[in-house]
Each structure stands twice: as structure tokens, then as C-alpha cells.
Length: 391
Ligand SMILES: Cc1cc2nc3c(=O)[nH]c(=O)nc-3n(C[C@H](O)[C@H](O)[C@H](O)COP(=O)(O)OP(=O)(O)OC[C@H]3O[C@@H](n4cnc5c(N)ncnc54)[C@H](O)[C@@H]3O)c2cc1C
Image (cartoon, rainbow, N blue to C red):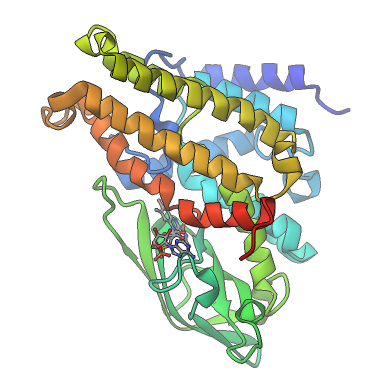
């Protein structure tokens, strides 16, 4: 018999409450930031994320909406939402390092993979045995992804891959990557000569070099590919039809960006900085604070409509709208917090974790207008696909 949402919620809360303390709701919840910070360093954070995902899987709490035959629970969006709500209230580890596998690779495999691929990869993503990265961007192919040059040539039973990827989040921790390659350099249109391959990250010829990001963390990497032999059956979708598969992945990515906003978090941040200071006497600052609060409210309300499929009449490009709104809010609120705090946001005592927060936020928020496609590109997509403007 299908487990009701109420039963699932009770079971999940009992499990989590037995292992983790309740969060203090007044303390900022930075687990949701795209570029997360970690007291114990990058590797401890990724390890904790993996262990926690494993715990959820073992407790039959992971993969609510994934079909049972692929290791999921075969339940509903409401079951998933119930778990997410509980996790925001408890002091559980940051799950972001597992996000590319669970949020991008898993749905891509479910929609484009063969039956064998679904059975092979999906359960291991859910159980955290294998984590994933996304190998799309290249030094000369970011916004203009279709101009990517990493090439793959079929030689008997294997693709021979040569090239370079960059900005690959969590690639140094991943077992697998979704790799976009140019498989037909002579195709009439650049879109039709691209293939998506499943890349095992420890194959000979794959080298991963971490990059230090603006916050001083190790969020992303460069990935070099030299004569890497990838088996013929590692194609996701069909050879030379990877552009369509990648667009499915990117659509999901855009709509999943919440940048740590929503649920009143930005409101709490700006009010915490402002209350008890003179800025509340300044009408311009009051207006800026109100504007952040109103924008976050709009993001929440629109998010509900987006989930229900009614934003832009359900046009898939609606994800771009969400991404632009959330990115703007993230910038606006992190800049406001720093403006309110003044000097204390620019200088603090070493090891004072809380005082360093606003500075991390303003640096980390720069990504919100770039990752998953820049705001200019999202606006182009909205103009062309939603408003029907000429290209
Ligand atoms: C935090 C973070 C995580 C990331 N993780 C990954 C990852 O895991 N895997 C991955 O593959 N990539 C990842 N990326 C890379 C990301 O997808 C690219 O940075 C992004 O697509 C932009 O590409 P670019 O950096 O090459 O900039 P460019 O494409 O060089 O753009 C430079 C500037 O030109 C503007 N521009 C370019 N073309 C146009 C146009 N047609 N119209 C108007 N303006 C234009 C852009 O808006 C931008 O302002 C990540 C990026 C960030 C910030």
C-alpha cells in the first residue's frame, strides 16, 4: 500500500529528529547557498553530504519521485516537499555537493538513458555510492555552448576524447560526469554534431585540477581530457543528438536555482543587519529593505506558480524567469547587508565565522548572474521563446 504523505512525514521526522538537533531558526541557514562555505573545509563538506544522502537512502527517504525499479520510492512531489520541509528545520549536513547527481544527472538519465543505464546509474546516485559532475562549459564555450570543441571520435568500440572543460562544480569529488563532446565536426549545423557521454572520472587521460573561487573555496575545477577511451555504450541519448539532451538538463538547472533565497531568508538577513542601527531612520535604506522583502515574497509566490506549471503559460523557458529574479534578489540583498553593516562587513576577527558571513555572501552572490547561463542569455531566451521576439 502507498505510504500517505502524513505517514511519510511522521516517519521522516522521527528518523531525522533521532539523529540531528533542531536548528535555531534565528541563525542564518547557509546550507542552501550555491557556493557554500564550510567550517571544516571542502572535502569534509562533500564527505558529509555523501554520508547524509546514504543515510536518507538506507532509511527509505531518498528519491521520493523516482520509480521503485530504479531505487526510488515511487511516491509524489508532496512526499518530497514534506521531507524538504523537515530538513530545513533540523541541523542536517549541507547536501549541495550531491546536487548535480540528484538534481541534474538523475533526471537526465531517466529521460534520455537506456533501460540498462537507468538501472545501472540511478540507484547509485540515490544511495550516494556515486556522485556526478556536469562537464559542459569550456574555456571558449560558455554562453555559446554550441561552439564547444572537446572532440570525440569513434574508434571501434570506444570514443577517443580530447579537450578541456572548465568551471566543473564538484568534479574533483565525482565518480561520473555528463560530458558534452563534438562527435561530428562536419555536421551541417553545429547543434547536430554534439553527443552526451557518461564519463567515468578515473579513466586514464582524465585529469582534474581544482580552481580557487572568489570566496577562497574549491567549488569548481578544470578537467583535461587526453586520449580518453570511453566505451561506445556510454552515450546518453543518441550519438550527435546530445544538444537536445543537454537542453533538458539545462532547463532543469535554470529552474532549480533558488540561490539560497525564499522562505524569508533574505528578509531575516537584512533585518538582522538593520535592527538596532540608525539605518532604519534613513528613508532610502528603508525603501531598499522593503524592496528586498517584497522581491523575496514575489519569488516565493512565483515559485509556487512555477511548480504548478502556470508561469509563462507553462513555457519551459519560464525557468529563465525564475533564475533572473532569484539572481537579482541574491545580489540586491547581499549588497544591502554589506551597505548596512559598513566596516564590520569588510573587516572581522580571524575565525569569527558569523562576522565573515556577509562578506562570503556578497562574493558568492556574483555567481548568481553567471552559473547555469548568464542573465543576458536568460533574457535572450525569454525574449525569443516566451515573447516571440526576433532573434
Ligand atoms: C558557480 C558556478 C558553477 C558552475 N558550474 C558549472 C558546471 O558544473 N559545469 C559546467 O559545465 N559549467 C559550470 N559553470 C559555468 C557556467 O555555465 C558559465 O560560466 C556560463 O555559461 C557563462 O559562460 P562563460 O563563463 O564562458 O562566459 P561568456 O559566455 O564568455 O560570457 C561573458 C559575458 O558575455 C555575455 N554574453 C555572451 N554571449 C552573449 C549574447 N549572445 N548576448 C548577450 N550577452 C552575451 C555574457 O552574458 C557574459 O556577461 C559554472 C559557473 C559558475 C559561476
